[in-house]
Length: 364
Image (cartoon, rainbow, N blue to C red; front, side, top):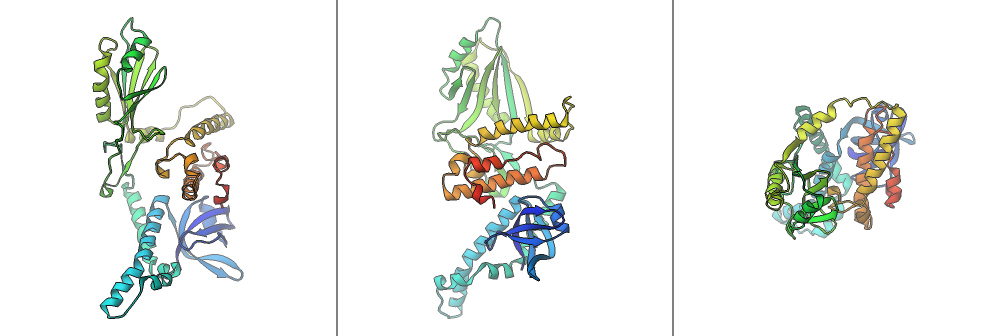
């Protein structure tokens, strides 16, 4: 019967390991020529695995799932299995038959669930495929207040003769600014403020930044040379920040220059071919990998939404957290594996993070 599998151990044109995400258990080696050529590490597929002459093969279609769609499918299957004994008891009582929910629960095995759920795999895959083809798969991204993400910078020029120390003293009068060093402040929400809950029907995702103590970050302020810059992730939030700063900065700075970039523009910019760097491909690869090393070493101690707002290092301290960390790392590897051949991002090896976080045993 069909199930959802995680792909690993690829030998292109020959075989791959498949781990059943519904029934659990150890991965099994499957002999598959065509399918193993087009898949990547940690892809997720729906298919049927059939034992044949002392080996395993795939029978029927192979449907590739993105991680978001497969997570939703697994959650739906879990809800159905959990609810099934209760529904069976209710039906039995309507028919005048005595039944016990606890006694029935073991009867609703993953195999029985999958035997009745084949249509769910096809429907989920088809729905995701159609949405992708129509360009509707991209969710609306909002900040903690529910405002659309639009990165906005306000550059305040210091007036002639104004010293940096004068600006620092003025910013020290704003209670919601937390100074991190001589030229950088975090703008924080009121103590106890929580992100706005976005209704699921709006197909939105929240982009929220928190400090280690749980404080909600609204923006940042930086002082470099003769310019003070306020950065926020929405136009509305930038306007609030401007109103917050202007009273204490009167006479110290001039009118701000606004720089605005929304997500759509960022995506367009990403699709533009990069300008030539003058470096060889190998030099570009080494430089990019060094940059990624520095980036991820910071990320390991920063809150990650996919980990419930915990840093990877903190999440890895509990069994459930380690499972989430492993899933996060697999997603990073999977995205890299789908890069175009020759892309230095695709050759970056994140396995050092598995060791750093102590979750190597979950890599499989």
